[in-house]
Length: 236
Image (cartoon, rainbow, N blue to C red; front, side, top):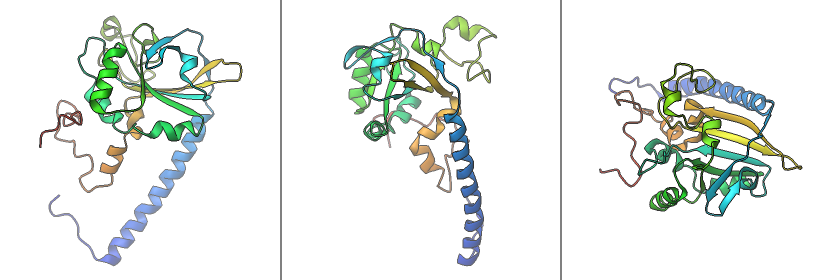
């Protein structure tokens, strides 16, 4: 941050306007990408899934809760873990309150993890979250939609993640999946994303992107999010 270029107000405005033009172009490109995402073909969900949550046992179709669209965040929480993934917890701190707004646009939002529901409920209470969270402990949902992998899959060179771009790094992987339910109650898978594909859903990161130091993670190891703690674990 030392020796950063310092200019007059006139020169600063000129530089800012030049960047603004690029920002506007980026916005237009993102709008076009979003349009193409909405035009993706859908695939039917032919398998039966039953989840455990605050409303007891519910099928995938029942999780829509009156909406025609469903967004699922694949929260990394292995059944053997005592706590959920700290990075997913960082993302989840951005979820409180959004479900109400999404519901008014015909979207139900929730998180799904393989850990038993009792663990999810306790962890959710500890961190003060209000969004719905259900367990896929008794079904293959996370395996089928790229949120979890078996040890054999991880060891195999043939196992591909994120549509063939990488190998899974662990049994649990972050992701987001989207579903649509038609008037006949048929459910379709419309979209899923993983890795940096979930980056946009973290508002804190995008605020950091506005600052002079940015995310400031170049010195972090063994991964860029080594600095992240659950919000009740920071020690200043």
